[in-house]
Image (cartoon, rainbow, N blue to C red; front, side, top):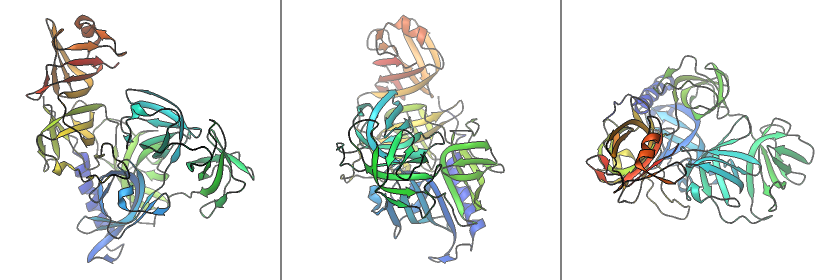
Length: 484
C-alpha cells in the first residue's frame, strides 16, 4: 500500500515562508551582497549540513561567527540535534546567510540514574530530570549503552517544570570528580549570597565570577553555571562561573523562526517556546497531524517580532516519530520530496534531520547527506510519523547494509490464514510463517507460539519485525516481537 502525500507541509511551508520573509522584509535590512535582505533570527534544531540547516532553513555559513559554549569554533563542532540560535539575513532570492550561530550546552554531567523502555525514558544528571525519546539524536553512543556514571553532554530545552527535553545526547570522557568541568542551566531558586538551587542541584558560587549583564541573580532568574563537584550523587556544584541569561530579544520587525516545545500555553494567542513569547492566533496551519497545539507539544512557527512578541504567520506541529524502518531505498523523487522503502512512500520535509551514525568530534565524516544525495539501493534507517493518510520523515540515517530489513510501528491491518499471519505496518506488508522461519516474542522478549501471537497482534499494537526484503515486503519474517 502506498499512502497519499498530504504531508508536504514543510517543503511547501518553507517556500511560502521564505517568500513572505522577502516580501515583508524587502529593504528592511539594507543592501547586502547585491540583493535586498531581511533580518532573520530564531532558535531551532540543527537538521543537517553542507551548509547548516536549522528548522529546515538552509544557512550559508561563510564568514559567520560560530560560538560553541562561548568559544569561537568551526562549523564541524555542531551536531545534528543541537539547539542553536541563529542571526542572519534572507536575501531576495530566498537564500539565507548566517551572521552568527550560537550553541550553548544545556547540561553536562554524570548520569545518576536512567530508566528506559524501547529507547524512550528519563535520566537524572546534576539533579535535573532529562527526558529523551524517539526524536532525540544520540551522537556517538546508542541509548541502550548509556549507564549510571557516564558523563553526558545534552542539548535541549528546559521546561517550566525544570526538566530538560533532550534533542541531542553525546557521551563524554570519563568523569573525574572535582576535575571535570560541568555545566547546567535552569531557574535559580533559594538564592543566598553564597548558594542557590537549580532543580535538585545545589550551587555554591561564593568564589565564582557572576555575569549579571543580562539580568540580576535572584529567585526566578534563568542561569547557566559552570564548575566541579565530587563523585557523590547530590553533592553541590562548586561554581567558577555563573551567567544570568536574558530573554531572547530580536530587533522589532525581524523575521523569526522558533522550533521548540510549547511552554506556558494560555492559548494560540499567548504561549512560550524556546523563551520567545508567541501569538499564533492568525497563523496558517501547515501540518495535517490533527494534533492541537498545547503544553509540551513541539511546534515550528515563523513570523515577525513586534514589541517583544513573535507574531506568527505559520505554525506546524512536529510530532515525535512513531515508525522506524531500516531497509534499502527503492526510489527517490527529489522533485516531489519523497522516499520509497519497503513498499511505502514517505514525504521528506525540509526539516528532516540527517544524523551521522557513530559521529565523534575527532572523525572526518561526510555530513552532507540530504534527500538528493540518496539513490536506489542505499541502506537507510528512517524515523517517521505515521497517521491515517501519510508518512512523514523526521530523521534519515545512512547505515551499513544488513541481511534483514526492519519495520517497527503500530499494526494497521492483520490477516490470519492457517498457521501464517500477514501484517501491515505504515503501508508495509509483513508476512510470517508458523515455526520456520518466523519466531514470535512477547513484550518481555519471551518466545511465544503463533496462536498466542495472534491474540496479541491486534490493530494498534506495536510490533518490530525483521526479515528479508522481497518485492517491497518483509517476506518471510524471521522474528516478530509485540512491543506493547
